[in-house]
Image (cartoon, rainbow, N blue to C red; front, side, top):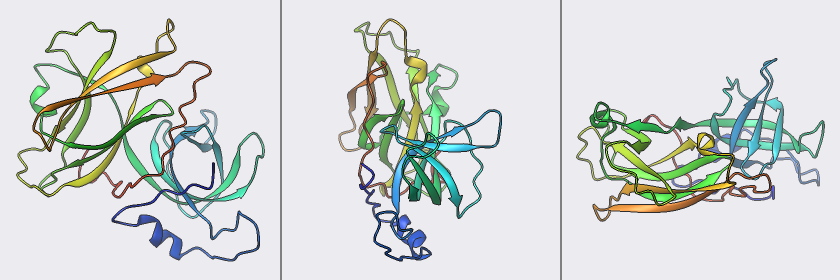
Length: 251
C-alpha cells in the first residue's frame, strides 16, 4: 500500500524536495520527513476551488497543507510528492501535505487524417513501459530529443488504413521528431484518457497499440486490456524508474 516509493531515476527529483523537509522521527509512520512519490489524477469540485488527488489504486488524498501554489485542472495527471498527515478522514483515505507536483503531459487520442498526417509524424520511439491506471494509458518512452524544438507525441486512430475488424481497438503511438538526427535518448512520460472508449455492452476492451520501434525500425504492437467494469480496479500504481517528467521536450 502506501509504503511503496517511486524510485526516481537519473535525476532524483525527489531529493531536492526532500532537502527542505524537517526529518523529525516522532515514532509514527507519518512524520513529515517521510514522503511518497506517486502518479495521481487531479479531481476538482465544480462548485468550489477545492481539489484532491486519486492514486491509480483508488486511494484518495486530500491536500490539507501545501508547500506550493498549484492551479488544478480536472483530469490532469501528475507525479505527486507528498507526506501523509492522517489516516481516513472526511471520506478521504489520507490527509496529506503536498511537497511538490510535476504535471505529466495528459492528452486525448486524435484521429489521423491525410490533413494532419505530416504534423503527427511517424518517427521511431523506444517504449520502456506501457500500462493502464485509473482510466489512463500511461506510456513511459524514450525519444531522440535534439534540442531544437519540442517533439510531438500522440495516440491516434489511423483513418487512412482499414480497421482489421478483429474486435480490438487499433491505435498508434506516434512521434514527430521534426527532423532531429540526435541519437541520444531522453525519457518521457505521457498519459492518454481512455474513458471515451468505454461502452455499455461490455466491461472491458482490448487495445492493439502500434509503435514504430527505435531499436528495430519495425512496427511493434502491444495488446493491452482496459477493464472499466464495476468490479474492476486497475491496481496499476507502479514503483518504477521515472526519471524525467518535465514535458519541455515534447508536447
